Length: 130
Image 1 (cartoon, rainbow, N blue to C red):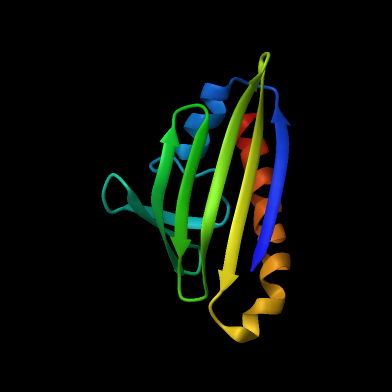
Image 2 (cartoon, rainbow, N blue to C red; image 1 turned 30 degrees about the horizontal axis):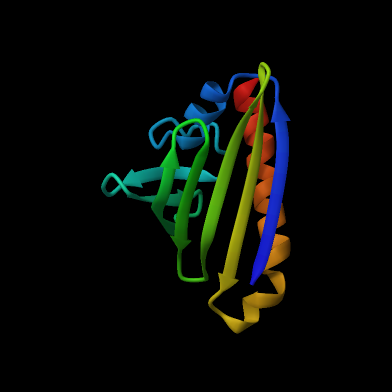
């Protein structure tokens, strides 16, 4: 199991950050994705540029405050929590991923992989919000 957390402050409204992060139709800003397929109001599938699919099941959604989901693919399963906090005209995000590798061979690498993924996600989000 690996737990990775990132907190970042963005110089824009919580509405703008929330709408960007939670949109399942406007994802072109994500450099790691080729598409998102919405299955129903609680589930969606993200496909990497290589076509690898991860299924997400939304477990909590409080607009402009909290978004959570379970995630699973052939290599891992876990939970993601996103907390959005207004700070004047700025917004702080607090994103935590808790992931368990399904394959013994991958367990030593899951933490480093998550950190790399979160770093790229934050870089993409920063670019999208500016």
